[in-house]
Image (cartoon, rainbow, N blue to C red; front, side):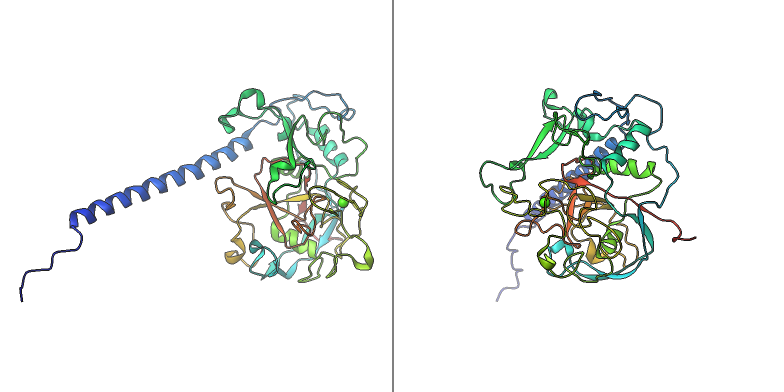
Length: 386
Ligand SMILES: [Ca+2]
């Protein structure tokens, strides 16, 4: 037997080199990941700093309401008026089971949460309410502003025109998640002209305002002396005390054979039978209120919440008054920070998204304006009679 040491299977020099390469690759990956997140944070910050009066869109035309055209005034867009609880419901707060074990993975795990009392709008913010805000402040929504070329590298400048995404039924049945086949970017579409030039909010005064991005919703809320609800507050309010129920009105989709919300009936996105009476938005309050007196907590338009979105947030968040994670992650678009939307819209149906269930979660970047996105406000204030 020899005492000579067994030669190593792999030369130490090779091991060192491999480790060094692995370390460098890890470092580069970490750096690139960090730069990606940093760039996205800067992008959102840049949008937040956009002056509200960067551009005064053309007034007049079918979408413009008398006296509502924005002006390049010096009035601060956030000059708040005194908050009023008129049109709001008192939500008593308390404990509830949030989420749904039969729902999507981001609705899980179901956990008991507690929220403090608060006020919330009985309805989604309407066109006429938003018009009042615009008239008072001259605020220009993000969809009405010239897109900043710095945020859209590679897009030709002549394509960077103000507008928003409008729903169109495609000519052929698309793949399940081929969103672009039913969302069309329409130049000139905005809250004033929901389907673009030729359409108007006038005549839809009581419909929820649409094409408002998260930043627009926050500006309105600040002006109204209010705020957006947290995601936990929103779900507590939507459930109306029906703990663990599948729908905001109870366990059955159509009690008594009647639709309880403005959603989609038929094959999405090809044919909407509109059995509930509405192809697109409905005037707020067209369907019965939940037990807290809130209308359209299911269907009509998605509603912005204050929280950033993360699919894994329910696993680790605080069990009292959770305010959302510090950062955002959508695994389908990991470089894009997104805010939470709740409640579903007139485009939601059973076979597709079921987004009108009170536990269902949606997300979009805070500068996204869509034809089915709106909001309602919340307020922290003393209870009624105080
Ligand atoms: Ca409908």
